[in-house]
Length: 357
Image (cartoon, rainbow, N blue to C red; front, side, top):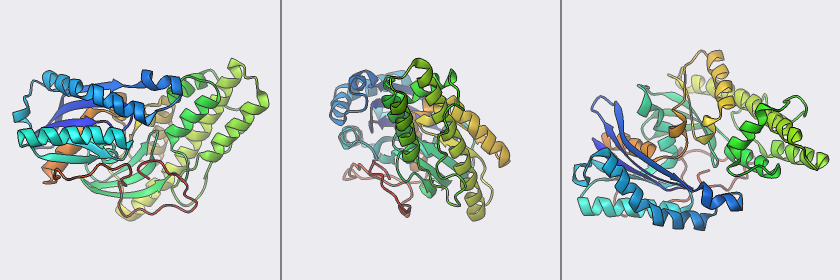
């Protein structure tokens, strides 16, 4: 089957065509991504109104290029998939409305994809991965440990009680005067830093649940930066190294607990999988390798281009759902908030209001 995927939930405008074979194997025929980093950089973060307007201006051309690169005509499509949430509602409306128009004109099935499910299923796009597996999903808006039991079947084992991991990286970068987007800048600065100079806290270490908390660590970084001000380049590198080291240690601990909870409830996972933009961080990848080795399981991380938001992951999730007989009507609404695990409860002390939690 051939599926067109459309992604507009935040600050990437993307479209792709993916082919799914009957045996479950996949081939990416096209994958066009237009980042809006330049539009948002002057503001130090994503401005929802600017993002929505950019999606309106860019999406038609990106879809046309994706279709051209794939060599596929619209009538040949088996379905059209769009991220219907969670995300910035203006952008979600643009992508979902466009997908509905294509589905209506070409009498093609519509698949409204949960953006988080697309991340969860992306590893199956690039390798023969069997269910169930344990997912570590970390991005600018989400930090979760999820048992992926099958298409449409997810159990959240842990989540953040405050900041998402990518959000914390971006905010630390902003505190230190580093350019937007901040996550990669923190990673680069940390390379030349002394991770032992500052004794930053390791949040939630040793707790029996698998939840995350990064707000206190972020505050500790702010306090140190204010104490030293004005900051020299080496100060910035040392703070970034110390912050990243704290995140790595806390993440390893939280994931070890998450894998234990997974095995207690569902048996051994087929793999530990990382997805989302934070999974592109090389230091975090290294920490995950250690966690997987200790748990005696395989670590699977998609290529960096498929960790960040893209159309191929939406197309693939659409193909997986279509193969399972799951389609949606033209009345399907866009959603700013959309839990991956519909039965998940907010953890004690939960205070995050970002989309999708």
